[in-house]
Image 1 (tube, rainbow, N blue to C red):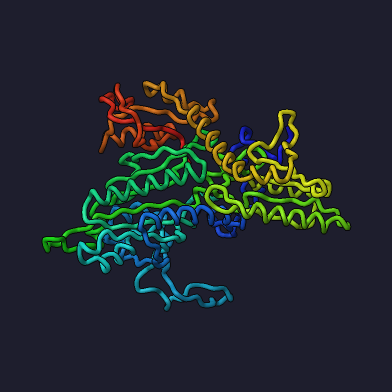
Image 2 (cartoon, rainbow, N blue to C red):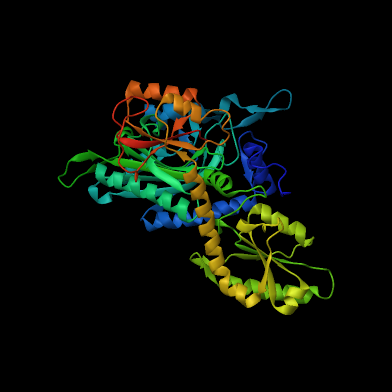
Length: 510
């Protein structure tokens, strides 16, 4: 069967991923290594993610704010473990002015050197910690719940659009609490928020759980994540939530006077998701014809394509399509008005159709003059693109019948994409490995998309954990997380031979 893309997932998954981004007009290179231009369709998906996530954040009583892009180096110097984790990725501003050199080029002015270098925001714990120290005086000021939508810069050596870029967009929540229990409750609330968003709105099944000690956020006491499986069997860390204990509070001086009048350190948290989620959506739902966007995050859930002929019949056809657009937009699906576009651009309907197919619009309607005259529509579900005979699966139906079923159709597409992804993930988790030889054999090079291995493990720490990490690194494997809802385990840990105390997933990862 001939597909819209020139490369298939089975042939070359990495090349397929890049072609989806290009053909769906989601993003392109910017001229700065590791930075991308997010085009309207890709940014429209991010706006939908942002809107839905922002509603969840505010529903939890968290207020949005904004902090500077530039952070004084001295702020990082107060938190040694934290800065060490990001030191190799930091972009540093040292001058505030350029001058022309003798050859007419532009160079930093030696007389404009900053007294203190500024770090281009890699994350905001330090600068927000300084603000919290000013804002919090008493137990009455707690909990302090803040969130910021922003860009961050982490100078990456190996980049891939949406998944790992030197600049990316995200939200970062930062909160301060009176005690550990309240801070942990917030850490797990944010984790559950991310799980629900991924599964309910991105249609992307995930495991929510705790990361092993070696994968903790620099300076954190505990790090939790949602982990998703991509179609090539690799894991994607799709969001994280961190309990930071009192370490950041001590470094920044975030203290409060408790009810007894004593000074105490706050317990802090941070949590975030980024434009990496878009990469996850591509690799979870895309097919050999392009992207498939879950209706909940589709900028346009329905696109109407009038088959214009540049003759006298076009006016009536456009009037019919506009009436159809208004009728659809007046309906609600997935809790919001249906987002529908009438595409009146010049060009052949088939070319426009395949453009929207590659972008992954959930429902595409092609309307010709005969359809308009007979009160008909011809509808195509993006998740069911072909019939069994290989032809495009357009379904002709009565206009009123289509309108009556449109909302339910979009909701069914949302469910269908999630069910397909979950079935694929669950079928790709292997539970029969009992020793390192078996683990190595399972991830052998001749198995192209091996999926994940589920193991019981003893939660080693320190030097014992370092040995485990080194053995896995030699196989290009990582431990993902220990799911919070896993059943009790028995048996021994494959790595240490000690009794297993919890479940962990091992996989190749992005």
